[in-house]
Length: 88
Image (tube, rainbow, N blue to C red; front, top):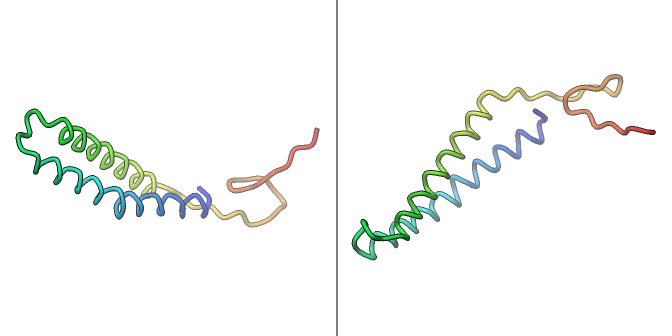
């Protein structure tokens, strides 16, 4: 992956953990305060959103853990990270 793609991945993980995760926690807390959790649709929706978010974070962390950052070194060849223009 290119250095730019690696940075984007790190930024997305950071956003999910620092913005989205606390927002969902607030939704869960607010839904808990509404009373009976068995019939509380907002609570169940928030818990579902939390599960999806945590799965997304885990998937991105795994992708980041196994990523190989490749820098494009010269214009003499085409490889990962190259930008090419095709002329017809």
